[in-house]
Amino acid sequence: MEIHIRAKNATPDLSPDLAELANSLAEDVAHQIARYASPPSKGEKDGGLLVGIAILSATLTAISTTINVLNFWASRHKTEKTVAIIDGDYTILLGNLSEPDQQRLVDKIHKRDQVEIVLSSIKS
Picture 1 (tube, rainbow, N blue to C red):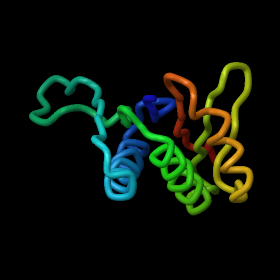
Picture 2: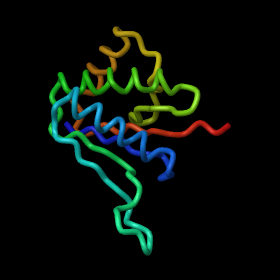
Picture 3: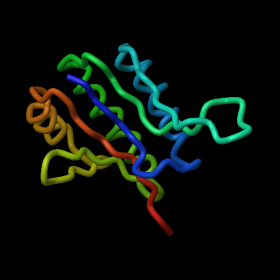
Picture 4: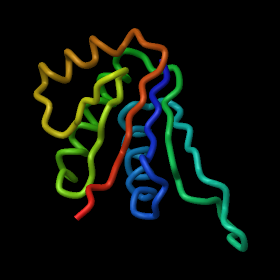
């Protein structure tokens, strides 16, 4: 399974958040984290904004840990950011899922080939 986490809109305020999540997941999940950046703007030396990360070949344990890390991160940033799992026709917001709810979510998504998770800013 692949887990893709992307910014809803590539903005400078979400790029550091994705970097923070990538670092946390690399420590906790111990899998290779792919990072996707937008192309650099004209005149920039470095790459563009970090717009997404992916966990490749995620095991059941890695999926569970990823959901746990994202749920915790979302709870700490709930007034300014949202983290949502997009699954077909519905969206599951992370940030206040109980452990049983997290386990039900893992049980539901672990057999999929790919899961999409979206990080968004809450507009004031």
